Length: 104
Image (cartoon, rainbow, N blue to C red):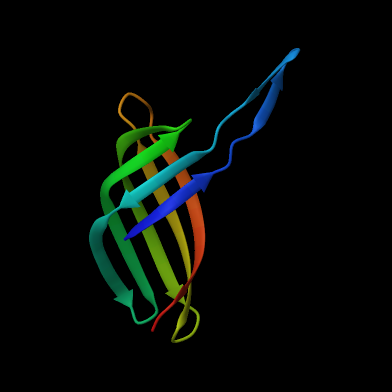
């Protein structure tokens, strides 16, 4: 499992000053396991190395992902998930996801 997570920056005004937060990009390459709970439900747990890019600075990170796919038909599924991103020296960043999945 590999991918990219993109968080757009935002502008914030504090008092009379303002600050624009840069975007954050999280590139990951995870490996893991899939558990088929039934014919139409499976769980996927992955973890591995990643790279975080913030304000043009690249830092190596680690992360993990837990997803559950429920197939509403033989080929189409809905996949909610939870992603954890961790940089050295900071708290973990947790993010939720919702995907559509297609089986071939």
